[in-house]
Image 1 (cartoon, rainbow, N blue to C red):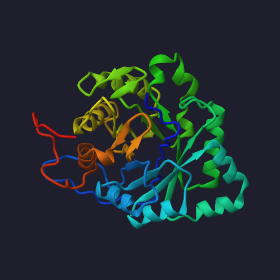
Image 2: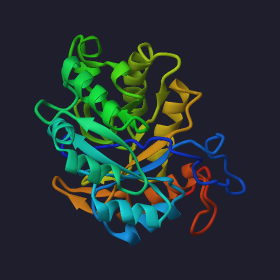
Image 3: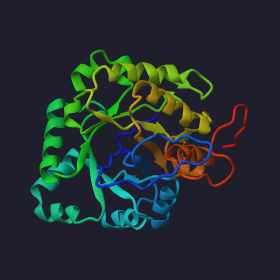
Image 4: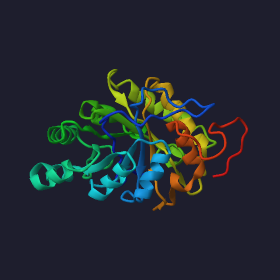
Length: 303
């Protein structure tokens, strides 16, 4: 199974106009006014300026880490012109509330844009509403201009009766951040890219969409990694985006999970899968490094 409890996904606040992302001839990246989020979650190299620059070259405008905010990470993101976001556990939130020196140091970081809060004391996705409210209200009071979110795990919708009633509280997140990684070993079964995983994702999103307030924004988190034994290519990214746009047609925000090398369980991030990089580059609206950026019917791709 692919878990994210130790792989925090964070969302950036909109702290100014995003980079002007010009579409490549022949392709249609998401239409927006220039402020849509183009986020990449970085697991390896979050303090490496060359990684931040590589993320920028994808057309991203937001650099996402899995750790507590650091000066080196903020400097790397700022040097590449990216918004910087970082992960906070419930314990981190308490530390910021009670330690004025620590709070001042975080507030001083350049380009710090927002946070995801994560309840590390419970299984991922099962944070009690009272814990969500406490973390959200505390962070909003400490960082009034930051956008504060918690990600929404989707798979329990299918196997935990009453999951959304018990745990989904969009009022304690400035945006809804849904995630389900459909190819690999999942709680809904093992899926190859050639299987009908789109039906899994669509069913989960339809149930969620019924409970998302009309005025609430959405940031889909797309699978951008490969699990050993479950090969993927650029079509996985395009297929996920198609389903999200079907359910949330007004949304233009995109996040890719994740940039990095191998992780335990033989998971390989997009930085080692050129076709995944090309797929996100196409969605983000940046020029491709080679060839046409759109998938032509029948074209074969190497990973």
